[in-house]
Amino acid sequence: MKIITEYRSIAFAALERAINLIDEDEISNLTYAALELRMALECLIYQKASFYKDELSDEEFSKWQPQKLLGVLLEIDEHADQSVEMVIESSEGSEYFEPIKLGPERLLSMREIKKHYHALGSYLHAQRYPDKTDSKSRTKLKKRLSDLSKIIESAVNSPLQDVDIPRFSKMDCKFCGELIVRRLPLNDENVLAKCKSCSAKYLIHIEQNRIGWEVCRAQLSCANNDCQKDISIGIHEVKEKKRVICPDCDQISQIRYCVVPCSAEEES
Ligand SMILES: [Zn+2]
Ligand SMILES: [Zn+2]
Image 1 (cartoon, rainbow, N blue to C red):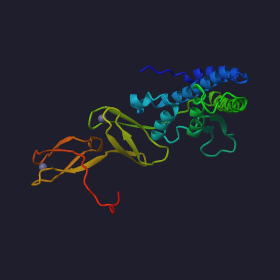
Image 2: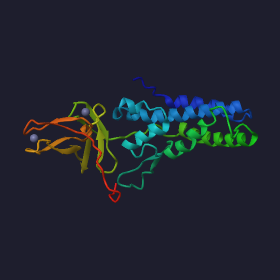
Image 3: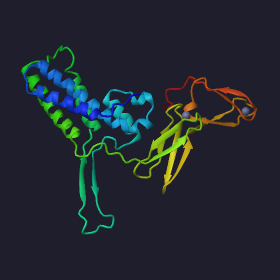
Image 4: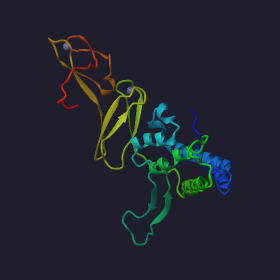
């Protein structure tokens, strides 16, 4: 898949076009400005997503709505929408070494995307009732466009850009052999990893720089009543009609969902 790495410059160009249109009073100009700002929002999230490409499946990476794409990024990195500030300072706290602030990287937050993206979209369709083309609505739209353009401007012109200092752990999938790359959190909390190819799930244990990958498994019982031995499969393999062979008695068992009657008093 081809990646455009300079989404930021596309966002900048869209922002400039939008700013030139916002001062106009014609509803058509404001509509075009809304379209340009939506594109700018998309581009800034695509720019961020390009740093996570190795950790996302093609399906996840190709999500085009910023809210959904950012949601995927937040699943693997809870800081993906948080602005950061970098400071260089002496590790020993020397009084002769003035800390150097490299400035913040301004990122768009999920809250901002949720607030603005779909709201702008409502202006990009033919208007029914209530009419959004009257003077009061135009003033409201101009205010929204103006507020959003300031947010996008601060992100596009952020003093620090594309900060990404991740630490990764990698492992070949035990089920399909595909290389799995997982970004590790800054703190040493355990994290889940998923194979892009077969969806196998792993729990990564992190303890004092020791990293261990554990397959997330489900335990089944052999369907042979004379055997009933435990059979372990990957949790991603638990699907209707999945067949498993008992290593003890060679009985083939099949996973089936079923519906059974229950009383009204039973808890769901
Ligand atoms: Zn796999
Ligand atoms: Zn068996």
